[in-house]
Image (cartoon, rainbow, N blue to C red; front, side, top):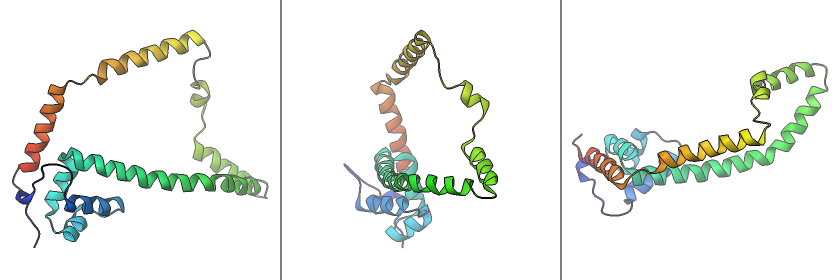
Amino acid sequence: MAKTTNSYKREQGLTIEQLNAIDLLVIGKVNQDVADKIGVNRVTVTKWRNYDIYFQAELNKRRKEVWGSSLDRLRTLLPKAIERLEQEVENENGWKIALELIKLIKIDSNQIINIGHDNADQLLTEQAEKRRTEELFTNTSDYFKEKLFKEYQNQLREEE
């Protein structure tokens, strides 16, 4: 029988159940499958995913690792894929492939127009404004972080 959400307790770090849940979520399992496999209620897994910032951070970290290695593998195939496309474009119906490639990469006039500024002063102004905006909005006070953390903790403790 699955454990209830009330059995969730952690002083520091992630529990074994949470680490196992992350392993299953990373390979594409849904909340119910994960809950069944690790012996907790589906609501517990959902709460971990929605309100437990440590769980979310570890899940994101693991996803980045998986996606990173997958993207590396795809990048190694890219030269071969491009070479094959070049060969196919030369064939009798190559124009169809060329047309599909143009659609796929979505080249339009806006991309050509919006390449970027060609004036150094405009570039500098844009970068300065971007930095100023980042500084204004990245100074989140500890008070607001603590408040949000407490809200998440309360959500984790609520009854099913």
